[in-house]
Image (cartoon, rainbow over all chains, first blue to last red; front, side):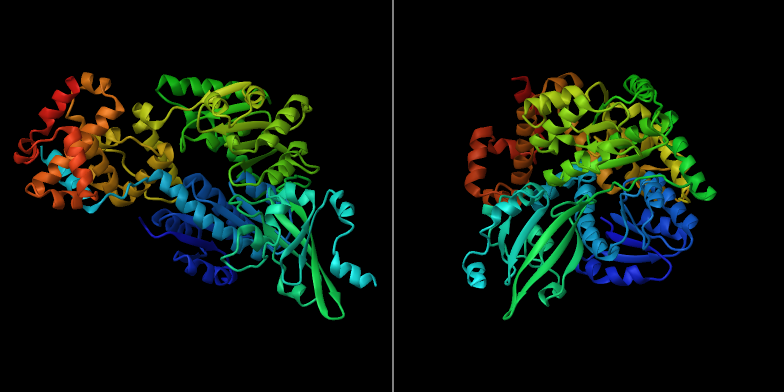
Length: 153
Length: 466
């Protein structure tokens, strides 16, 4: 399985620094991106992912990314963080596919808690799609040789 | 005098706090729970008796509830504070809890702390001012993305689904969508929303699993709840079988009496709701009220004829989002995909194709580009399938299949270990005594493994015929 990752899309790098320890403790990768195509590529190429988008000055860009990721990678949970309370933008974010929209008071403290629970949930959800039974080594060997024989036949 | 009374009997006026609708609790100076009213019990889903003496700390080893109720450092220093915390055990917040902490200080320092919890939901879905045109355009694209053409199919079952979705778009009555994990229940719910008469309002998805009943109740049916909001067009309930029965009863009551202008409810079930009723997980009256219309989504393994169409759609979506896209599936790759059981359904198909497209670098997807796990699983399924003809295969019962697999593994392990039962048991990860018992039970003799296990196919066929 590819390494699980948190991808943060923001302008100033503050949220990434804020999440750094939490993510490292869980042995996930923390990746930052400031360009939409690069961000989508990171999500596409990585393992189980969580995307955090910080709403800043360029709302068009940030909502376009939200829209693009929800359209192409529907299973990735997206968290939108805003420093301003705005019900209209919150509504738009939900409609465009955000799973959570964090607004004042104290969106950053909420973010830590939420990202932790999302990391756990994302892994267990990814497990549904790729359920693997851990077999004793001997059994795995036998099955492997069976598959090889079948492929050879 | 009064102080003495407080020290010896901290809450003689409990009834006063019990009657309030606010969830209120009291911690002593050591942050241990000493009182909680019935509103608190309802919100947290825990009885005060069980939670008494709970040590409320942010330490990672503490329970989620203890972490949520832990006062911040400034409160311990004597200052009042208000914090927002996610609901314990909720992987799906919002809602959040806003907790106001009021320290009670005495001459010899902190006495205790009063906490009051209020629920913050996702109710701020309002549209009271127009969006800037560029953002408005993004919203206007949603009906295109969740259009009927995305659901088109050559499989008769799926054609029926499209017709049912079209019908659901014309009214606001509750709809049940049944389908295994990954079959696209939420996508269908969004299609109904964006193509239907609720499209101008918001779509809110609520995950019923993992949220305490009190929070679900407040979110759905409380004073400022989704169920009473004019700005919410559709509430999608993921897996309502996870709801507490008391809330199911309240929801059923609300559905029965609700005004015609409220949001429509769409419920997504993984299992047949009738089975959930039989298992005691869903109230019959709730199922009855939700199932005005029921849409059953077939699993991907039952619509393999759609694989080329689905892979084209996924490839186009990927290209539109700046991904590699692809030149389609080669016949060999399609053959492999047809042989895979797809336990994760469409969600798994998307993941597999995304990975294969990246490997193919824009060219046609060949078997070698597919994930190894998929190729191996197909090889295994086909290797086991050769032990019986299709007609016999259809007749096989699970016990027989498991028995033949077990027999095959044991014989191959013995052959590999050259008859050494201890080594074979070790390879299989079982005790030697267990292996001996299974040998007797399955009537495996030395002649079975002497030939390297090759005769097993014949033997299995014989057993199946018997």
